Length: 139
Image 1 (cartoon, rainbow, N blue to C red):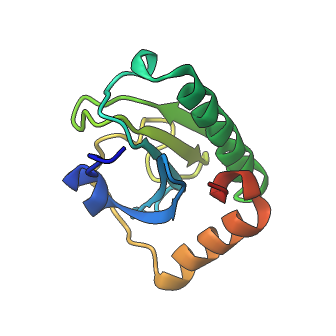
Image 2: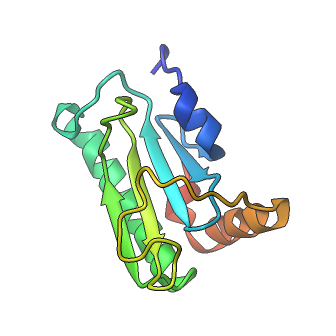
Image 3: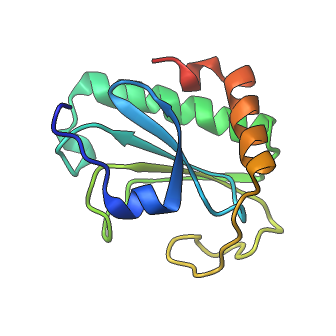
């Protein structure tokens, strides 16, 4: 964890919501879909390489974020992935999808369409997450 350095591409395409100590919780800067990233502060690239305690912690966070997306942001489907073909740094995508979003039913990965959040939109999601998903924002 001491040598953790966030990949430049992840830093440029997302905003920090909360540093949970061993994991960064981030929000994608693309407002076209609600898209969270969980980035464990490890030097590993594959899920199976993570210590079991980290896998359990990440599973709980993925579940809590998924429930938040479904109940609070009213998404139709949740996509979860640890692709890492372009950015090898370990990170988990938790993406809320709606049937009327910009690329439904296709995947969101690698699309060029982009709409930035306004400060108010970003703050609303973060405040709602803090208020309704304490498991997501507690270190």
